[in-house]
Length: 446
Image (cartoon, rainbow, N blue to C red; front, side, top):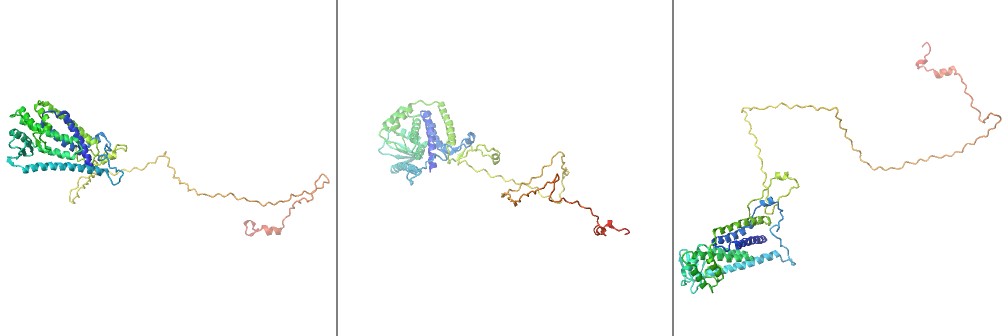
């Protein structure tokens, strides 16, 4: 429901711009039919603009996806101090209740017109239904029903005036702006436009009534004599209306606008284009229905070729369209050859020449792979053992007293005697030096 309210706010903003252009350039001109169609088309276009966008502008201008009002409009979903009261629901229900009140007023006015038509005498003249209003000086029309007093003065003039309203379906315009007013009751522009469209209807009817037979002075006097004391109706085109009498007489005497004055309408084209661009760039919304120039989506290949620092394409919730699925490439295999089919010319290629690897003498062979060192194991280092020697204390030898008799020294220990060379006996030689198996110890004669 909140998206619907955001849509109405945006549409009423555009409607105010279009009506401002009308008040500045067109409302004093005498081409009334053009002004009538301008107000109708401007109102329709104002409510159609929020549903349109030009998605290519986002890519062209490289705008950020986060826009002025966020996604779908400003968030006003904050709750008050009471957790059971939601502001969104309060706004929504308030809007609906007031709109229902204006709708009930429209139904009441329709009921009044229909009840008046059913209670009075009626007579049909072609497509027109004449409804007799006895004891009344007013006259008005509603679609193809013409309410008039049969005995009223200047009846032909009044009939001619009201037939213009019926032939151009002015009642349809009034009913259309009544619905616009019900939906946009919070916008005062809708109330002013409804009054202006009814005034334009009277300008058109006055102009066509006085174009040939009826003098403008006499027609103005008829309006002045019958306009006072009549209560205007909300849904009908009433010839005698005191509130707009002065402006109707002024427009009767105003000089016709020149043909080049119609060129002012061309100024509305760039205004409409600017509002269309504003609808795309200044608002982030999810109620867009038509994209006039959609944003170009890049292929997956182009996305992969982009550098990582490339800017990302901005896409709103409504613009995020999944990429198309990849096309499946069908591989066509040649049909199987028939057994009896003639052989085609086959191109025979020579076998590849394999060259052995030439070892370059100057090339240094790569070093052998170095085995990684074994993992270090925490070794517990013990101190070397302390070996204590057996300390045996010997008493130093005491020198013996030597008696000196002469210059020669005499020791107590007698000197060693020289070894005497003793000859071995033959038995010993035989016993020890002879060995019968030794080759050098053979006996003579053996």
